[in-house]
Length: 122
Image (tube, rainbow, N blue to C red; front, side, top):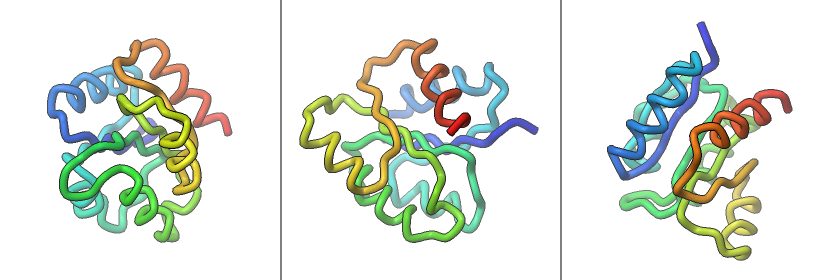
């Protein structure tokens, strides 16, 4: 089975588009509507990569990343922020929380897959 990726975004259409892109590339995909939903669905499972939005209701991306980084099975999991935010201070906040990489929406499928491939090579 291919590597597993958790997508966390409050936009169902964006989650579907990202999931379709990744599944076509051979990845297994899980989805969460916000940080709290994703943590619940993840439970004690381990994924190989997490892609999360920043601005979400219930639990935002920064809080979600901080929560994920406290879990032994997710401490070193690569985390890609996929968000509309491009401000340097937001990127710094994401990096400080534990984000590994950052892509600004809207995204190009090829660039997303390229970023995912790079994160798996680390």
